[in-house]
Structure formats: structure tokens, C-alpha cells
Length: 306
Image (cartoon, rainbow, N blue to C red; front, side):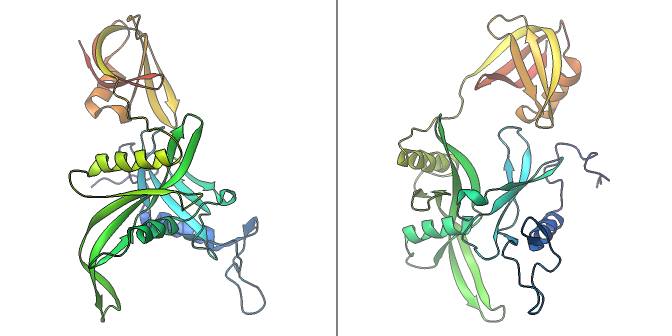
């Protein structure tokens, strides 16, 4: 197996740069020592002399991994809540290949993922047998309209046939499966939508259906994924590179008057095509590429030198 001594030496294709145990331990220490605007080794209190700090933060659940739509890179995502208010979201940590960021959301009045999931489970009701429970909620922005975006908890709800294990002193699930998906407004848990996993709806169709229903709650209409994909053949007039969110992008100026500028990134294509674009395709070369229009950018999702 390969080991990399530093973060800088770690290739972009490695999705988990930090060990989860190490990352969660550092965040727990950081949150456990908070007092006011600083840190205090006795933030947990000491006898009757030093009172415990209410500014301490705890990890809500373990680490999630998401694809950042801006960079196309996988990032670690960890939510935290105040130690005195498990129903409230304090903020989120986001660990990239280069840095660990903390986004303080405490002033926005968002609920925690556990609170959002509990509301969906309550709305579903009790099953004839077994139990429903929410797990692995994920905070993500949902576009309602061009001028409105709602931070939303994606809350999977599972069904489990659980029995009490007296030796372990806990419930043990003998059988479990995904039952439903809910979307909950992080600023108001009474605004949510959920759809069960049944019939022919599952996977991305389930996500799309729930998101459509959720957006409709706010009077919006869901905008589907980009479908403007086409092939083009042209020659390179100029080639340059740029760094976007710590990731290299290659921009080609072409002799095609309709699509004079196209752009490529490692996250948008397979490794072979990326190497071809990076190393083999240069000024005056002819190429054939598959292009996807996303916003105002013509993304290269496949390319070959002619």
C-alpha cells in the first residue's frame, strides 16, 4: 500500500485525506474547550470553582462525505451543536484536500439533523412491526428560485426489525432497509416533504420526486439537471490553465465560432481524457470532445486528439 507523508503530497483522487478518527477527535477537542471567544482548558468546569462553559460544541453525528458542486471534489462534512442544545445546529466543518473550514451558522436559527429527522419520523407514524428511525442526515442547499435558496436537511428514514439484547443492553437490528426520504427546512422543521421508497421509485428518481415536492411547498418549480450535451470537433487556438477552488482547470480557445471557449477539470472526465487534455492536446492540435453546458460554462466531459 502507498502512504503519503504530507497533505501536499496526497493526490487529488484520494477522497479521504484525513483519518476520520483523527478529524473527529480534533474537532471534539476544539469544541470541548470553547469559552466565549476563546478557549479554556477548564471549559468543562472544575469542582465548584469554575462553572462549565455553555459555549462548548459537540459533534452531531459522524463524518459524511459529499461532492462539492463548485469544485467537483469529495469533502468531509461534520455538523456540530451546542452542548446544552442538541436540537440546534451550531455550524459545520468542511475538510478539503488543503484545509479544514468551520462555518459558524449559530446566528441563523437552524435545527440539528437529528431534530429534522425526528420530525419526519413523527409524520410517517409507527409501522405495524419494527421501528422507523432517521439516520445520516445531510445539510445541503436547495434552490427554490433564482433569488431564493433554502438550507435543507436531507433525512433518510429507515425501517428496522429490532430486538433488545440484554447482554449488550441495547437494541440490535436483525433486518433493516431504507423506507423513505425527507427534506426538511433547516430554519423551520414544520416545512418538509417526504416520499416512501415503494413501487418503481428509488435512487435518483426518489431524490428528484421529494425535492420537487419540497420546492413546491415554497411556490417554486424544480429545475432539472443540465441536458445540453453535444459533440464538437475543432482545433486549439490557445490553451491556458487556471486554479478554481484549489483545482486545476484547462481552458481551450478553439476555432469554432459557436463554442470559442471550452473548459476541462479532472472531476468532469475520466483520468485518461484528463491526461490527454493536460499533456497531449496543444495549440494547433485537432480534437473531438463531448461538451456539457452547465450555466455559462461549456464543460469538457470527454476528449480525444485527432
